[in-house]
Length: 119
Image (cartoon, rainbow, N blue to C red; front, side, top):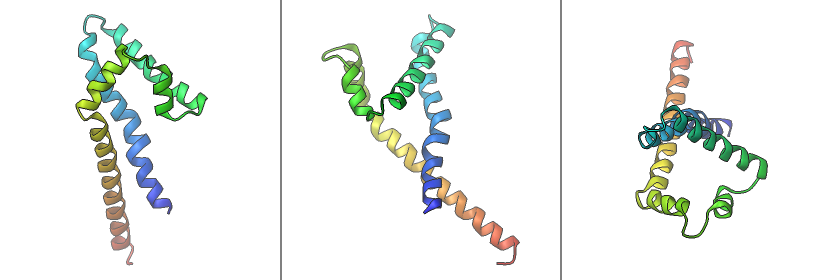
């Protein structure tokens, strides 16, 4: 039971937090070239603010999105494009891949330990 959670945690918060969110900020940065470091600061603060709002409110991310997205506004236009491009599926696949790889590495570590400890 604990190993299953360890693999899932490895696939989401550890890999996800540093790599997935950082990669998203990196991908957004070309559109902030004119803003330079200011854009990076603003986009980083936006991610931080969204995370804090989720944690403080206890709301499901979908509820929060619905609460802060205006009908016909810029955010929903961008979300539509992300959905149309398959971002949700790509992120789910990335988390599943990281979780699967964590499981493989964990199994290899167990086998190596058993091999080197006469079991």
